[in-house]
Image (cartoon, rainbow, N blue to C red; front, side, top):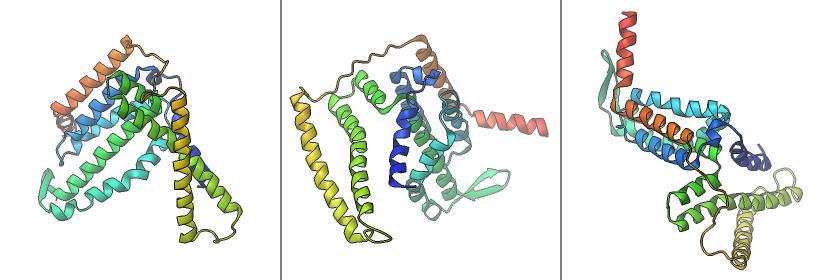
Length: 269
């Protein structure tokens, strides 16, 4: 994949956020609160829980289905950042060599159990966060944070960070194109050229940041970025939030997977 393709692939998540489905029409505040509740519920499980986490995949799957979000797009993004989770948990089998019984005499290392639990939690949290942006847009999430009385300085910094990632990518794209036009084969791809590109990119970034800041001051910027778009909590938003909250409560505080397992075992016995 070329650098240009990677750039447009990053912006594809913004294109998904402008669809007109039931999930996209929900109030961003409702989706943000539900997502935070989902994340806190998932990470609240103990490090040896695996079966209890499986029902929570129903939520991101329903969001992808109703919101018409491509499964492979979310899957590739999760795989892209998964090495961080793997690196965190890969040493668990060495640090926690105890044995845990999982099914009628079948035992497994407690370290491997906690490792798989980390991977499941990571997949659930990252995919749900991506789906929030894919169905709301990042500016919509920032607006929801502002509406929920999150400090404006934090929201503005978050908004600037996301917005100027694309500006930085465009600047990098121009430098890489210039390098490609002036080189052939493997020439221009050594470490010396790479360090020069990074230095040029840093200088241009600082200069552009100063120009942008002075332009914002000349237009009356005072530390906040107000939005003219207004959102209103509707009945559908309340029903959505209440339904997800009930779902999370049931599968967090009741052994639903054990009850289902006993039922299936009784049917086939």
